Length: 303
Image (cartoon, rainbow, N blue to C red):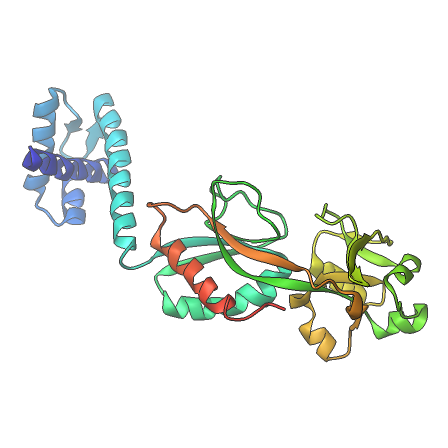
């Protein structure tokens, strides 16, 4: 029985090659067989099924309707078999396309600088990186690994923590010279505060004063869906922004942005996770990429 099944898979591969090439000799060359061996394989299939699958002439080979149906089924079965074998082989040598989704600024500043090292370590993996602040559907197959900020909602996805990041309130020296420097959180009510345009867990900007945590509702003339835009606006002197610290290190060091109200910063941290479809069938390329991020990012804080 095992030998019969093995013979069938070989016969199916021979027929699929003939269906693609419309030639016994071309199919034989592709498979490294003789034309007579390929012909005998097709004859055995026809004998077993009791139908004719091909019509041979001196110049070409044409599939019968039954042959067309068998060719479609054979292609599907052989593709499934190749996928299973690739998945098993992948456990030993990670390879294949890996789609990674990350937020725009964090991806550019934190994830992308690590990708060259990852590619050197795993040359068989072809990275496909998408940077966007729009959440992609990992369960729906739009990405293999996504980097997410903040608390995670209930989901069948597997998550690995990569670290966390704090947030700071900043403005440019030019803005502060023009509008004044806020000394206590309530001073922000008289300033142009640049906000995110999507709902956040806290109803306003959080502060800690005299041991008491509270949120202050602030407003301004511009909202954006990503921190990088808010940082650019702050650099241009448009207003005051509160963003993740991974945005700010270079600008603060260069004196382009000034940290405000740090004595009132509650030092809240936003968790960062890699999310993916886990389980026993998780490809090795996903596993090694997530392990790499954990190794490189949890050893340091993003800020």
